Image (cartoon, rainbow, N blue to C red):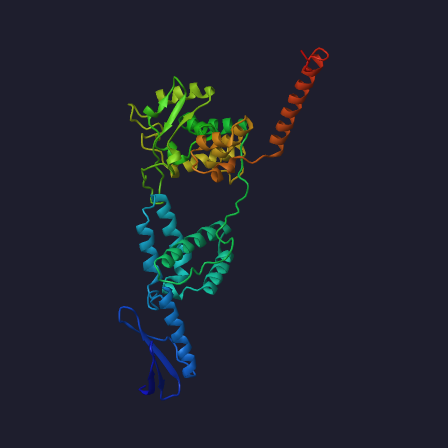
Length: 385
């Protein structure tokens, strides 16, 4: 519809349509014209809108209103590709996008993803899947939208639900020493050492998969963790660095593993210094999928719960280490953890540990009191010369 009348201002202009409604427009610093996204009932309302835009420009807070008109799916996929992520993390992010985020937001532009839409999406996901998956998905969406905010494509991150990205996982299970031995026996001689290194190493499955014979030093009972080879959902071994720089470490092994370690090197490891420590019956590299079937059968044989994972052996070993006196720093080094927060997972104190601490305190006090009673009377007094 054509303009009925208009007025010129120091900044921008307002015009009235034949319908009686008013519009406003202005030029940005590059000379590009922008029009108000809506019409106004009065010229005063249009003038106020222009004043707000002028103030934003003056303060440097102005953002191109068309900047957020970028498809979320395209932006999100580029975001993942540009991160330089590890293969396993990239696989996780793409799966979360495909299954949980893109079905809700793929057709929207960045500036169309609002806080109410995010809240509705999260509520729907909480009904459809587990809390851990929802938390991971929310954290990923929030990270993508935070980058869009930094890129000045949107004014504010719409992911503003407090605590929504926090995972509340159940206490991890631990096995007894007898159960670890039973698992090693049930899996058979080829995989026996893997169980022990998972528990008493304690090493991640992807680290075990890339151990080489040259990494083992039988004389001083150590294993050098240099790299990792996680297995992706496609079955491909993604050879690369450990989870963090702290993952590259020298692990001291308990002496009782010496016989198992020597036998494994002689009987089952690939030959030569660069030979893999763990290979299957056909001489192929360790495969999570094949080992998983053996693990489930062994777990059933031992009588462990169906949700006891191989990874829980790592938790078992660390819990036993803390009971034997390992400090938080000891745990971090041994686990290959780069933060105290991660290492603290293994530092919980259960009733049995509390009883051990109480027993130690009892012995300390009893010993001190006995020494005090055994000293000659007045032996601890300071005498004047």
